[in-house]
Length: 404
Image (tube, rainbow, N blue to C red; front, top):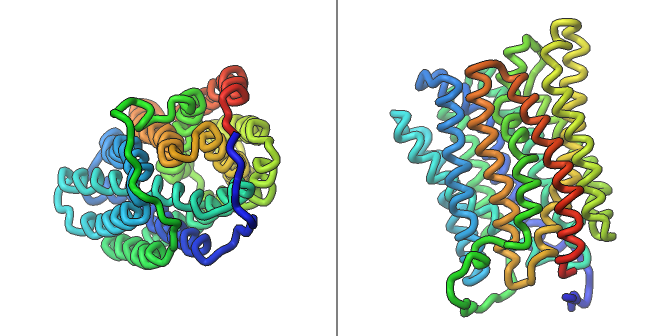
């Protein structure tokens, strides 16, 4: 049983504020492009839906391939230099998109972007755990994740508004790059505790993957597949079913739901109700995805009701995922010793990214051969499987193997 030695449980410090700002600005640049890139690939390169899914998934595949190694490096060497290097590469790749004249070159930059994203997100999550008191970890991770939610609120909305207003793609890419440049400055101001190099035992699988976290990772992977479909294709889905309301507000309502959930979920996690919070979130997400798949039928019946339902679904997804994110993160960290915090974080994010990548590929493929509503119906069924697996397998496993 690991006991915290922090004399004070002060959460808000300058370093914590800087890392939250850096996280927000990084994800703002990321989310601003997320719903715009399918249109960019379609309009600039003439890509079909299947090709769009393949190109977009290259980013996630690259991120998940590097995550286990980034976790190992962050556990072995000083974390801040690796974090800053990855942040710089992530920022530079927005410029690469602007000079990519062919789809092949775009894919290359997309892969590099994914590698840097996979490293910088593991680094940020690990550093914020290092600088916060362990007794307030759930609450601290909740607020840290709230930066993502706010970015998700205004990022996609900004990107879609700029696109709909006829703003050129280089300008949109430049906005994302500018946001990340300011974020890089904030990241450089974070002061981290000294961490001497660690001599590691011979190479083994648990140096790269938290083996105790695999059951939870499977549940999270299944859950993230429909999430990947939603973040990348919900604007196209809305256009397909004839919704005239601004789809950028879908992400706004989703982020509002996440923000609201942070007000209580992190504190519940710190009180030990980790698995209960995840279960509650799963039930809400299951219902939301089935309703999202049904929007096509509601739109044929009454367009106004469909718009209201569309935004209500976004709010429900936000509350569900917003509750689960800090709980899942804490679950993985509580299964690992302090010397494997980076590995635990990378396993958590790798599971998420695998599902996101599958969601991008599956969403584009199913939409190409059928329609987006069937893609979301497929995703809804996966959330049911995830819920059953979590309650039957993950909860008992966590109670048996938790370290704190």
